[in-house]
Image (cartoon, rainbow, N blue to C red; front, side, top):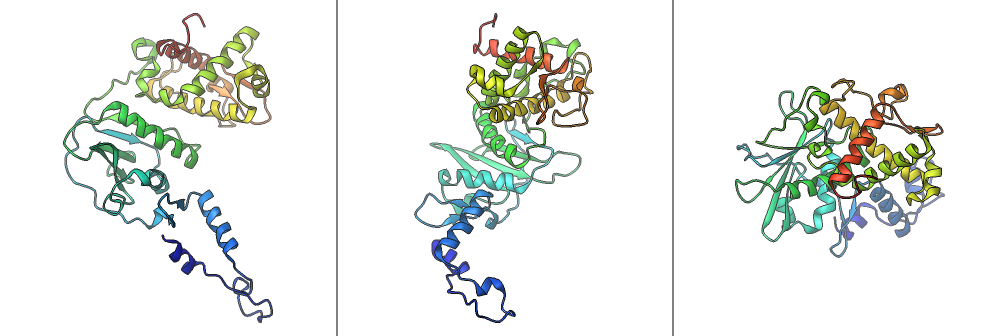
Length: 329
């Protein structure tokens, strides 16, 4: 939407406080350019409009039209970004954030599809399937836009990171989405104890990589708890002891970790509880024995037993595999 069109929709007016009460208050008060600016900043803060890096105007994702998605076979090696609930605003915000690197906007940006040019001639088509038929969960399909070929895992993970950042803001209480490769089903064991080879965090399709920093913090907190011989800790104290974060930021990072492990244990099970792990850490009614980290406001925080201890051990092993920490740390 151009600056001229914005001024047409939100025109200046002098106002008339002496007008009779029958005239709406909105029309009786003055409206200036500064007022228009405040309204636009509020809309931007709520993610309804975005700055356009091209000269002038704003981006209004909600004005995009929907298209009929292609009815054709999806090649093996494509990916599904599966979610419990997919609001349109997640996909629209992705389009808005990536708008300036998308060529030929009018032919490539829609409410339910975008063709995203990654680099050079590499192009990926993202399709938002908000209400797929049957019992299929909503998903964003990630497939090649130029040929019937696979999408590299590294590229799919890059898109996942961008979408996760948006999804965590828009749906903070929902489980994080899963990235699933089409045509290459991964084994899902009935119990992690009977299949130890599937215990590693690498079986979350690289979902651990975007959470590297929060997982490192989780490991550091666990080390300090072990040295103190207790599971309880204080976010404020951890910040004072040099973890480089204030207490609120630390709490937010640990909530990300707890949601990640919620999805992990639901999918792969727990050695003592099988696949019955269904409790979220931010559920106030949940028992501490069913949580990873108890980090409620104004309550003593702790890495819970046995779930939290098992999550910490998985984190330690994964960080060793990634060569982030030494085996004896």
